[in-house]
Amino acid sequence: MIDTWAQLAYLAAAVCFVLALKGLSSPKTARSGNLLGAVAALVAMVVTFIAYDLDNLPWIIGAIVVGCAIGVPAARRVAMTAMPQLVALFNGVGGGAAALVASLELSTADTVFPLAAAVLTVPVGTIAFSGSVVTFLKLQELITTRPVTPPAGPTLFSLSLVATLVLAVFLYAGDGETAWLAAVLGLVALVVGVLLVLPVGGADVPIVISLLNAATGIAVAAGGYVLGNALLLIGGTLVGASGTILTRLMAQAMGRSISSILFGAFKGGSTAGGGDVSERPVRTAAVDDVAIMLGYAQKVMVVPGYGLAVAQAQHTIQELAELLQSRGIEVAYAIHPVAGRMPGHMNVLLAEANVPYEQLLEMDTANGQLRTTDVTLVVGANDVVNPAARDSPGSPIYGMPILDVDQSQAVVFLKRSMRPGFAGIENELLYNARTTLLFGDAKESLTGIVSAVKML
Image 1 (tube, rainbow, N blue to C red):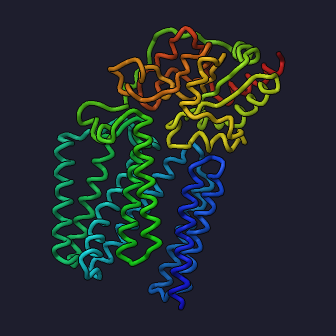
Image 2: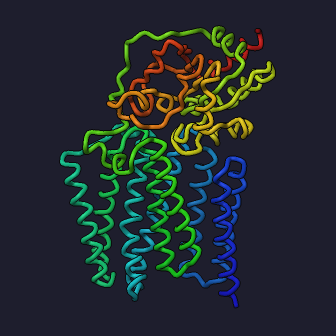
Image 3: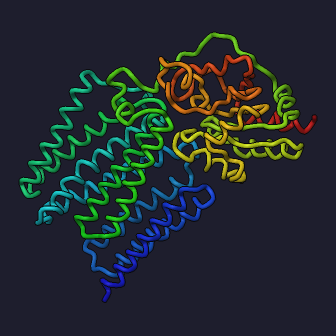
């Protein structure tokens, strides 16, 4: 009887996971979807404690306490600019946990499919763990964001991958009872994860995070099969499927294939350029000049980017937008799919400032309106508005869909310096005759613009 109601509770939680994922597909329902998923996970955990006799209960409770002590403060205190790094770390922890659980279950998996699932989970979860750690280090700039190709990198990666497959076959053939072989398999898989991500550079890193998230989902689903836990199986499958779809969508938004993202550096291709700063002259302006351009426009389009998040200027940009609207000026936000460091980064950032959802325009919609826009205000974005992606076949980002802000009547760039964006390449838009640059901290510049507009 207890097992029956527990399974029904798990089923309800699984349905909630599906609904939560659906809610996350729209900014309007993302908050409620996230909350629904969290509640479903909590319910599933409580049901497990009530319905079953758990071994090593003190260790389990201790692990939960330690996890909460680390996870809750980290999630509450993380800056919006560091959210992708946090996602990468949490994803890595999930993959590592799945690999550890599977390695412990190897000796008890006594039938063909559970044993195969356990053997599969060890390398997949371990690769997700080590790869996620490297993406964290890159995004946190603890190591270079540029591609790192070790000597004989392709050969090392190929040999490590082959060794992983061979060890997995031997582990399966040995009925999973060779503990040292499982440990060696895990160590080799760690190397595979590192060698997989090190050559990835520039704007491709967030796409790899999504790919590794899908790998973690696969590992969790396989672990659920090994443990006979339907909820883990469903949850892992949802993560794996959604991560795979998101990876494809992000790659399409970058105009690149998955293979070129992962192995482009081995062939000399990557979205990371040289990062050199040009000495070419640009047209600059003062705060008052930009205020006049905006204050007497009829239509203004704001393009937010990572720099907006760094400056924590989302509230100031919304204050400026409301001020312009009070003067009868139409204002909208053009959102590129990969603006920032992860999908939805700008949506979440602007939601913090209570920007109306209807003002957030997807790339295709925004591009249809940029020709009739008087002033496009680019705040912290760079690569997603770089015409080289459209006009320069030799550019590392050629083929990436961009926001065609150079089609608007005037462009105002808020930048700290002439330093290239995350892809490390020069932006020709900065030298366009229609472009005006305002140097300085984005928040300070926007605050000055707000004050100047009020004086008009």
